[in-house]
Length: 86
Length: 86
Image 1: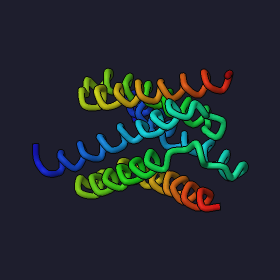
Image 2: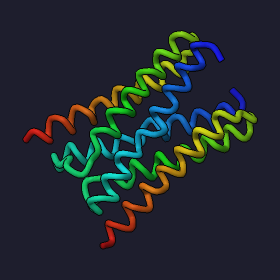
Image 3: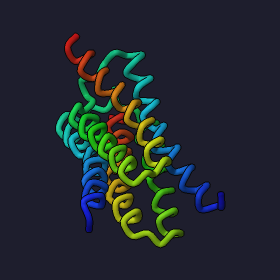
Image 4: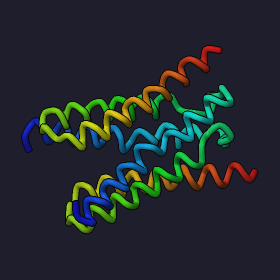
């Protein structure tokens, strides 16, 4: 692993974990009115397509990072739908 | 461009444009209290690192898609800081 790979990995980790503070915020406040369901819906859908792309290309880093992102953003989508109803 | 490239491009477009509905929502409501600055801050920072990675690797698709994402998410960061103060 050279320094370019490390930069890529670092970038990937930042982007992947970035949604976590938003999940924690919604979890604590149970408020989602200002958050866009469209944004997290389109994002989660896009990540699913990335996973399919990774599977076709047999590219494990793409599959793994996008699977983690997909799961985290799916939690957000669930939260938005669940707490919007309440 | 084969069908795999098209899938990748489609995934990239979805992920890139996903933040637009959130920008529009904040623009209309001027409310950001429930939105996590940490999430959009870390995301924007991660996208900047992706751009650096793309420059090092001389990979134009990575540079272009992440530049668009970076600019869009920077708008979100600005909105959150600006409207939080108000």
